[in-house]
Structure formats: structure tokens, C-alpha cells
Image (cartoon, rainbow, N blue to C red; front, side, top):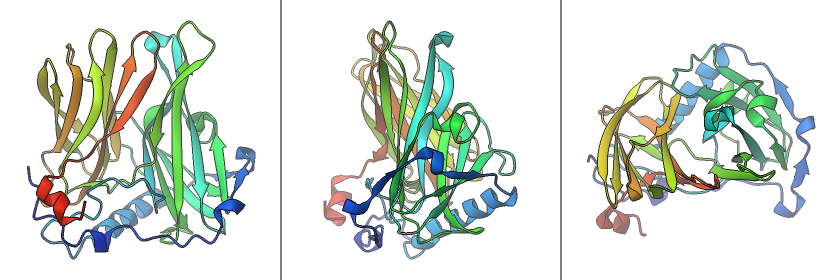
Length: 325
């Protein structure tokens, strides 16, 4: 593993504290019906994604030894974020239907324009033709949109959601947004629902050249539970990932290719693993700056209940000492 000479300047380069002019006590819950959702010019997604990538590289430019500014995942509001998996899609052999309710927050005291993209599972998402919309968030409000993929984006399927704040045609460095998603379906044999949560993830949390390996903990696959794993590739080039499944009873490894600006989600290889940890590694990043996200979810075969594990960097004791943890 290429972990570099970590991390003496990590703290100095950690995410800035955002200027939040709206007191928390004055934040309001907005109506999804009041959101302004508009079509996007074909050139805008490519422009904003390029600016976003350049911004991430520039923030780490002094760190030629490979220090990563977010080697440990922080749950914070962000300049831009990704929800790794969301959808409006049939599952369970067609007997179930999964939807994602998405909550968005704008911590500014002015309206925030946000580019929202849906990167469909298993595909390269051409910047001019993928599903993108501009959503304008009201100032100082939380807004929840039910079945977001269908109602806000007018599309269907499983994929990743990307949110990039913008002003006009440029990345907005003054943005401070956040999000949360719940993907759910009817519980088999019940009128109630079962769901899994997906928090917003900064796409630079894991960035090859700095962090090329990460681990998703706390999963299970046996007679009673099944597990899926997923990867989001936030890069204009395809990349190859080695994925290892380290179980109590079984261990195996596979290799997957994730398309540019794409995501995959699939079952882990068949077998009785018991408790299982999943190790992800980018194998072809070289010295390139590649942002990516790994995640996994386990589901109870009887009830449909489940949980999500977002992969985080597996720092050594010495590396943790260097960053003061």
C-alpha cells in the first residue's frame, strides 16, 4: 500500500470553518414545492466538475509527499458532496420498489444555486447527456424532497447523486451545503417500510495519490444476511479497484472497473463469511489525483432491515500520532 509520508500538515489544511450567518435557531424547514429546478446548459457540468477537481488538487498542492487533508472522514457541511447511492428503482425480483428521500441544507443567508447530477450505475455518464439539473436552495433552510430521483430529476434507476454549488457558470467557493438520504421500500409482508441511511460524503475524503486504500467495517453475509458493496469514481477516467472481502469464515478478492464519473453496486461474491470487512484499493492511480468513495450495506434476508458502512482510510498508529488522534 502506498500510504506516503503522512500527515504533519494535515491539521493546518483541514476543511475551513464556514462562515455561517444564519443562526441555527433561525433556520427554517422549507417546502419542496418552492424549490426552483431548471435545466442545465450542456457545457455546465463539465466546467463545474473540472473546477471542483482543480480546487481539490490546489488544496493539496503543497503536499508533494502525499499528505492527505481529509484522511479521516469528517461529518461536516461541505462545499460539494456526493450521496453514494440513491434511486427510484424496482428490486427484490420486482416485488419491491426503492425510493430515496433527500434532505438538503443551505447554511448561507442567500439563495444557493446547486448543480445536481445523477450518475447511473455501471455507466460512464457523459457530461452533456447525463441527468443534471440546477436546484436553487432557499437561504437558511432545510428542504426534504420525497423520491428525489423521480420527482426532482425526473429519472429512474440506481446511481450516485452529486451536488456542486455554483454561481453563474462557476464553482461557488462560498457555498456551505449539506445533505442526507434515506433509501427505503415496503417491508415484506407489512405496510411499514425498511430503510438504509446515506449521509453526504465529501468526494475528496479518499483521494488516490494520497489515500489509495480504505475499509468498510461492520458488515455480515451468511444464511440470514446479504451484503452489497459499491464504489463511486469521481474522475473523468475509468479506474480499476481491487476489493477484498475478509470474513470470519471466508476470504476472497475481486477486481472491478468503475467508469468515469460512475458508480457500481453489486453483491459480494457468494459464500458464508459471517462478519465481514471490505478492503478497497485503487490499483491504477499512479501519481494522479483520483477522488473516489467506497461503501457497503448489509441487509436482513427476513425483514429487509439493513445498515450502511462508508469506507474510511485505514491509517496506521504512527500516522494517527502524526495527526494528533
